[in-house]
Image (cartoon, rainbow, N blue to C red; front, side, top):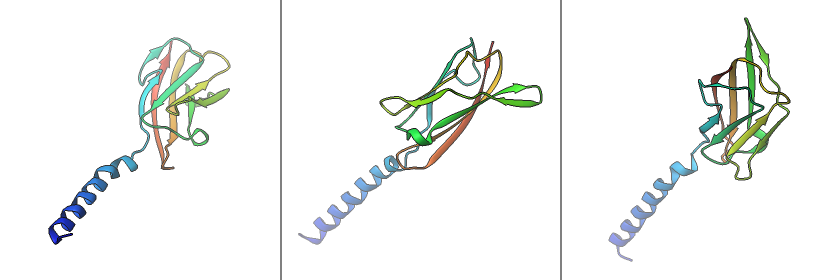
Length: 125
């Protein structure tokens, strides 16, 4: 192999490695949620969050609280499950959420084991 061919091959390998690197560093982000951020919705017994990539079931969860005057009241779920494709978290409640303002915090861990977090608010009428 000539020196030129060796340099060309090395450069091609380096560039292909750089092109793949961002994929390896990707983290899950929230793509869609029901209820959506800042939405006003009817009472429901389920919240769904869809992520950009597969998430780890044991490390992905939500915490929901309802504004109650100056205090926040935790709204415990009866179950939190990840869909078969690994992209969607479903959180269920024993009863429909009562009317009020809610703060939702989520935590998702992707295949790289790096936790990502986020939050948003919605209202039940």
